[in-house]
Image 1 (cartoon, rainbow, N blue to C red):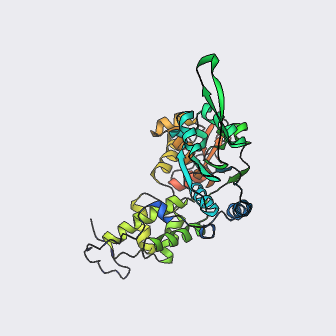
Image 2: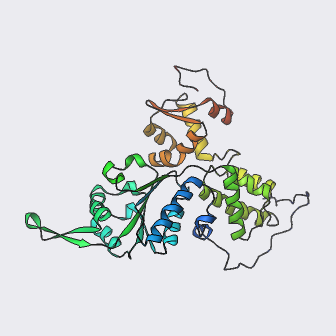
Image 3: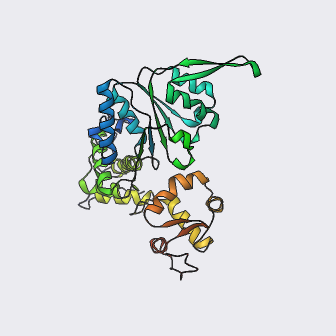
Length: 349
């Protein structure tokens, strides 16, 4: 594999081993902002949330239950941590699939401190019986503990400390109406602009002690498909190329070359995105095609397509969801370099 060249065209020297500073952050949690003021993007959501949290803290009350919705990697977990930090209380975090029965939920709720925060990720995946068990806990801060068996069983109320449930979901439509109504604060997070992602890359690079030129940060930001988590992941991978095949500096040239090799194109589409679009265009004549057939043809899970792939493709105008199925747009054909067929029964836009 050829070594990366410097910007002046001279071949880079052989990489040498470098001493690793243990203080440099190594995981995503270390790159998270530590306060609302450090949070980049989602200004309307963050500004409103700061008001709600500050008011609750001043009154010495627990914050109303909060529901964050939006695509994966958009900052829902980070905001949950910032809420707990601003309130000065600990946060307990758990994924909904890990709460297999009511006893598991009860163990989390009873371990919370007064005004504590319980964060449930993928809250739409709670079992219905567990979700219903949450209702009295969210409204009256109590649990109903069954005592005895069968028809003679009695429900013993167990008082809980006042707490805040913070839920995160990518599928608001899967939440029941009774559950949704119990969240006093419902906030929607959307994709970030390339300018915001560039700022996130710049800040993360500083925490990683990585030199990133403004143009290099911009190149990563515009290819991060509107998602901070992806921006940070791409930054780490580009850093690897810069350190191994260059002099450690992330320039626009280095970033573009590394991202091309990673299969991330200038619009942020990766191999899976292009595979989905190409499958619809070539195997299903541009659509419409049902999501189950599309998942089978691509060899991917339906949830992956619906939660991870499709939202960004729809946002960028490459794909449409119709009552009859998925349809690719004229822009998708042009981006893939495929000949644009004539419209058939209004399918091609």
